[in-house]
Image (cartoon, rainbow, N blue to C red):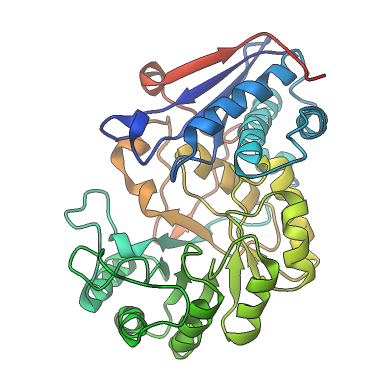
Length: 404
């Protein structure tokens, strides 16, 4: 079997003017001479960066034309070692590697008529415990209000999620100010004003009161706070029994993360902006993270994610795969979560409820009563619909060109 072409697709997923929207999934389809195609995703659907990922895959695709797609480790190493920038790493480089790698695993699963989880070692976990993520933006598929400000709104969204069967939730209680629109003056680095600390505490306290003692609450800061403010907030929230504390400071500074960990009695989590084993190494060695959060579409794909998770296992670190992308990214995450013994919980992002995004793929996997069933279909068990492909912006690479 040989790789004959690679399609790089920017998929409209509900944005008006998707090319400049804030949700732009980039999907990779690797095609073979035996008619088997595999799907993967570049993890840059959010933030600013999808165009860079769209181009990165095109460059890397030239390197793999003509390769046997079943030789996944060889191809990963070739992109890593033989493109010059592969070893340099960073967000865009590793996102490009990830999209291709996931597609190769999808091909291998389809070729052997097996789900990827079976190829990675078999099922250790099923009926995966799942949490509702990003409740500061409300919860549900069709929302009137998408920025929650008042503590009672945080209490109500907690009740909504729990009514759907979730016994764990995640919230960023600091990203929106105390103003009606969530904007305005709102300094969240350095020593914090009392109004900021009080706003954050009151929001989380309202969620704890609404959810009761058995609800697990995850706090996320998206690294918008620094070491000083993260410690202040963490200590303020300790009495509310926080499940873990995500990205409290700069995501690539192990010493800052360690300082937070040493001063806050809450488990620390991070990983969506940490890439490959080489990126995780120092965080694991200095014991600054208790829960790692690799994103399959950013960390180096399924090949690298499995190695990262196994590496973390030796340091007693639990794993919560970061999931924020199209249904392709969701399917890839479920494959590895089924396998690893240090799996903790699955992330179900508010974005995953969007009807337009869900309609881009053949299967609409959703949790039931706060649990995810792992798909048994061959490969990653997910593909774009023909209709979504027809609406996508596509660049096809079919000619090989190596570097040097």
